[in-house]
Amino acid sequence: MAGERFEELKRAISAYGEAAFQNLLRSRALGEAIVKGFPSYIGCDEKCVSVVPPEGPFDPNKDYGDEAYSYHGRPVIVLEPVRFGVSVVVGNAEDSGSLWLRTAVSAEVAGDSFEVFVGSQPMLRTPLEFEGKLEPVFEAVYQEFLDTFQLEVMEVNDSRFTDGIGFLPG
Image (cartoon, helix red, strand yellow):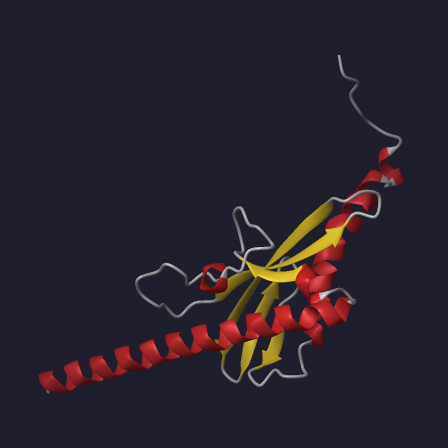
């Protein structure tokens, strides 16, 4: 009886390891597909979009490879969402500068689909066989970037704050 329990524990650990590895591989493939397909969705050159780390300093011109994904550098693969960043470089029309945008994406296999979170956008369910089915994810990435600027402008132009209680600098 005791030996059976140990064997059951070994089977559970093996199933966990397989699920964690499959989650990592599938989530990375999803990340690569998002970065590959997003330029045509928004109508920019492929070199304007890259996969980068989801947080911290980044260079959109660097090829991060595995370093762009949250599992990088961990000694053990765990069953958890895989995070990565999607970066878009937008050139400035007035000069030679450019703006680097980034949003974090989190993906995890859940049953027969991915649960995908893009920034502060609502969760998306994306099929595991996602080829040709990423438009909702592309739209969420686009909306996250757009919201970054539109919400700020809306707050500045909000007429509710032109009258009412306020404090003068003293």
